[in-house]
Length: 374
Image 1: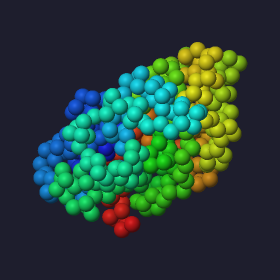
Image 2: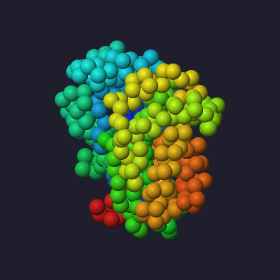
Image 3: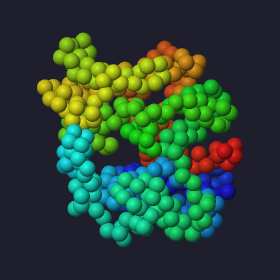
Image 4: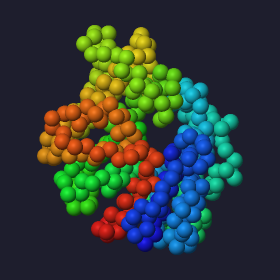
């Protein structure tokens, strides 16, 4: 059985499996040399087929990660084409009027200079009613895959973003014999940014899903507040955090700004005080602090929040073993703090736990579904 995996959001790429074994996977950016490629990974698909010496007509199924993606991001290739000033413009000219002034404003009007040609877009626009029509976009995505690969649309399956993260982490580990918890956290995908799964044989059972595990999103926009590109330069913030230190009232004041918002209640996230957004709120609150203080505060907050979440999960489900996947799992300083806790015996972080591995996770989802006939 031959299954092709596709991720066509940011960090797009493709993978190919033969009889349940991963043969080859590659990110589109490696071929195009354009960071954070967004959209149909045509070159990655070609590379997968060429490497495995498989004709596209031999593909049995196509597994696609992330059910719903907004057309507007495809139309401007957001993560690929955006420079730092574009991310600031996105906040100032699009989100601020929408959130704080309750104005109806079109994303594609703000970024009309960045809309790519229909030829480069590839997707047929007749399926799409408006710039946020994720359902229509899925139809366009399915149509393009069917056309390019000459495969029946019924053999193309779309899988939930976080399910892909979870199955990638689980099948990528060596922990099948253990009772483990699989945790995902990221900036967001399919209206979710945090999940918990438990093992049942080779199958995963979802026990918690939320769209307010906003630590990844907060970290992303603190990166922008500090004048760096979100979804790309978070590691620089993590590095700068080392210039701060504990036991200082000055640093504690910055840390408290974060602690007053999102908290852990058992295994669930909740807000003490919910900010209107994750950019302007913290930008205004933190304007009296230096860059290194801000970096220290968001990193310390991330570590404390995640450690508490993992410990509470461990106690509730009586397991000291974890797999952690999704973009937040790339914060190695936070994962180090987690494993140092006495309640945690092991934690597996799969290679490339962010969206670059979703093309692999999607195939694992398909294999699990075939095995259990879900």
